Length: 256
Image (cartoon, rainbow, N blue to C red; front, side, top):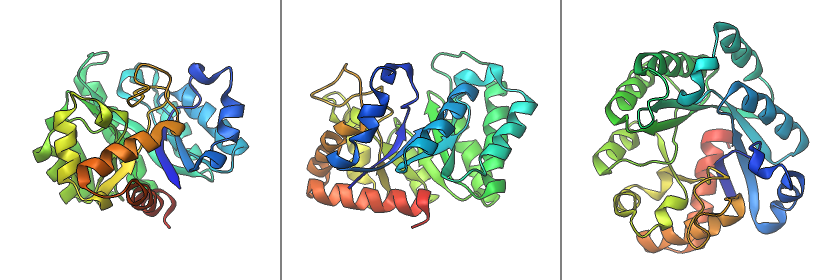
């Protein structure tokens, strides 16, 4: 069965059919979904989703583009609510220098604070990193030295050398629809290099739909295309990719 480790079903793109779509996931081969917070509002929406759907779990955290709204009171709220049942990670947290929406030092401050929260609560992290390779790696390394549980580098977009650094720390790489794109040479090389035992499937729904649905709204139902692409790169079966990545995700996020 498929384990989608990173989705945003609280997004307005699902307002018209969210309930119906999520209700039929298990009948379509999707066993677990982690809905990932990216703002304070989406963290609260995530808590609502995990209450309604037994196979939807949650991650709470604030994305680097959204940290202007984050206060110390919000941070305390996150700390209290991450204790809730079915919250399995702290995320989506990290650095984004592509748009430069927030000053780099402010991004770093809240990234480290949220990683410290994960460390305190013995939870993995879901890391967003865009055009911020060295700073992200340096900060994650520092926190891992302090005994952080582990995590996923979401929507991994760097090269093999950077992948090696994260893999050597025991972290997982999140692989989604981009791996199906014809121009995704660098990511395909990373997937070929990385052990299957350190890859997990993700969608980033409603974004980054794989071929042949690129440009359309994404959902967990598209993950077989991602698994097929990984299988072709690694010379194994799609069934093996789904089984191993599911086991990886359960081990990290559900402690199974």
